[in-house]
Length: 355
Image 1: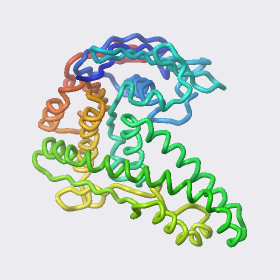
Image 2 (image 1 turned 180 degrees about the horizontal axis):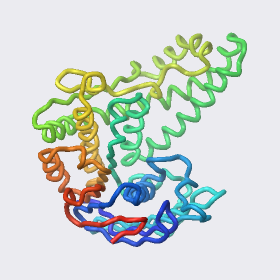
Image 3 (image 1 turned 60 degrees about the vertical axis):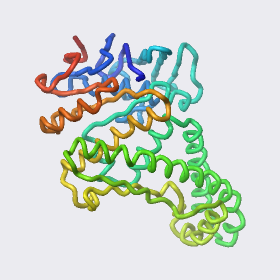
Image 4 (image 1 turned 30 degrees about the vertical axis):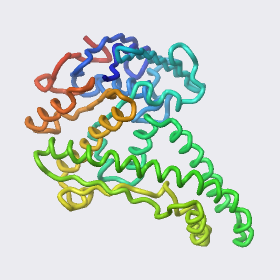
């Protein structure tokens, strides 16, 4: 079983004045020259499913130039249930999200209703950039199948913000030792649960990532290691915070916790970030994304929607064929500038219009 998007309507979103599309349940190829609206279209799909953009945190930028509001309407189903998600963006106001006609107060409630996996050349950041990118990968994936984790993460971030504020504003270290305790206890309780969820996630996704990478690459061996904070109990966590307090006081921020953890990615025993070619880094990042398909399927019972933004042009013919075969079990959206690379349902994009 797989969740599949059947239709998408846009009004004043990016360069689209008005658009209404129906999609094939298998492969949809969005083809057009650069800056015509391909990425804008998949951004709209991503935004409706995740509740935020993969390109910007400034939502007013997604409203068509000269307009006051924009709207996204997406319909998806798996043959048993159907979901309709509507997003309205207005200048000077918070976005409004509706699911099946009801206004959603917490954006976390949308996560996982139409699960989605997204990959673009920018996702190389997942392999080669700072640990923040790999934490973001874990957070989005886990949150789509575990809403409790999403709200736990939000709670942790608020506690961390308050603790860091205390570290920056308190001038006397002895006073700090007395006042920081309340935040330490809350931080340890939430932080330990986040570490546990991330460890379970990496344990679960690793074999799928290894299998996907071996298949796409033709035999290279991928390995993941979760670099977690080394604590097993809240008591150990509190002791670690206490030992680091003087350093935290000096720096003005919390130096220990899951907001500092990372994933090490190895290829044939070497760290991909340091020693892998760009092609190897890209295939490693793609393999992690493909592994998400299986993790979400295991957790929800259905495959998510897969979006591949400008990926085909980066792969040779053999890897493209292997990728298409690997993803045949789920609905896939592919963007490309080359019509010869298109598979399945062809949708031509030009000047914010589609046919």
